[in-house]
Length: 151
Image (cartoon, rainbow, N blue to C red; front, side, top):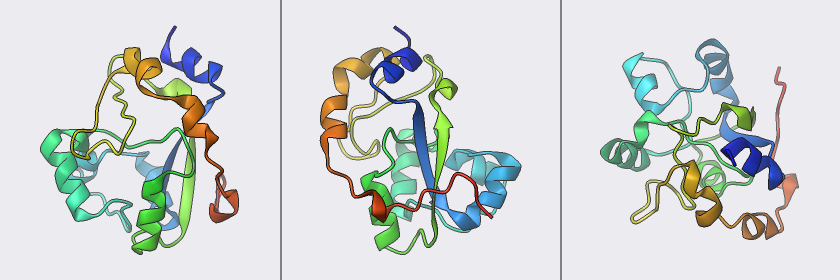
């Protein structure tokens, strides 16, 4: 079963990327880019969700070449970025799972750049991610300002 079919079977039709509203003009122009692409093309990003330590860890292990996405809209890193003031006006960008490529998309069941976090390809998703547990949390969706169309 391919990754798109597996995710749809689990009820996942979209994956999510959080950012700040101030970044939406850049996203409209260039798309959602990896940290590496942002640096290489000298693109002005007003607010990063991650801090400098996280960027350095991503760079050290090669995750700077990937866009960080989530299966859930209430990702813990969103709350950290908001609490720390890196994200002032949160925006969740909804992305269809069809964008995932079996051969080049990496997955993790933890914050990917954390010590010991497993990183794996699509063929291990069913074994490594407990979707029932992931969606069993009682999320307070009032804390999330979901914007699919913005001013």
